[in-house]
Amino acid sequence: AAHSREWAAQAYALLKKKQEEQKQVLAEQEKQKQDLLNHFYIRRGEKLSDPEFGCILWELLFEPLTEQVRADIIENVNLIIDSEPRVSADKILIDEYEHGIALYCELTYLPYNISEKLRLDFDENAGLTA
Image 1 (cartoon, helix red, strand yellow):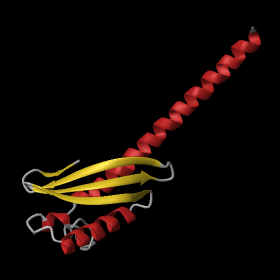
Image 2 (cartoon, rainbow, N blue to C red; image 1 turned 30 degrees about the horizontal axis):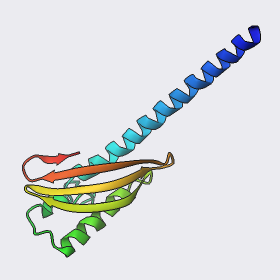
Image 3 (cartoon, rainbow, N blue to C red; image 1 turned 90 degrees about the horizontal axis):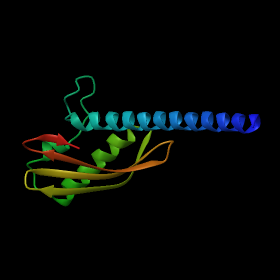
Image 4 (cartoon, rainbow, N blue to C red; image 1 turned 90 degrees about the vertical axis):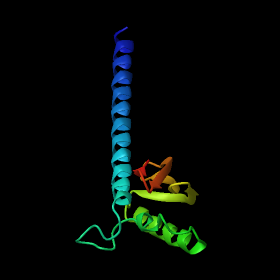
């Protein structure tokens, strides 16, 4: 009986340790996502110390979504995601809607290999919504 209580206590301790590790992973993933979102919130040129830093979607909201504009957006989005070494983009899609541009990304958070689909709406009236 003492042996089974000891085993149960060890199993419980292991389970609690795993749960705590999982919480830490999710907290780190959320921090990575927030760092990435912060980069998208900043318009290119707003950061005085680095005028090339930021997202160009804000300046393109009123432009026709031509193939060249799409290519420029995807290049900028890749630069933003590549600036965050803990995240990689598996797919990036751009779409228009009545008052803005929608950005769809399939992201993988490294080194945890957690994938997430993210939609960001760059809206001429409401700003950025995730």
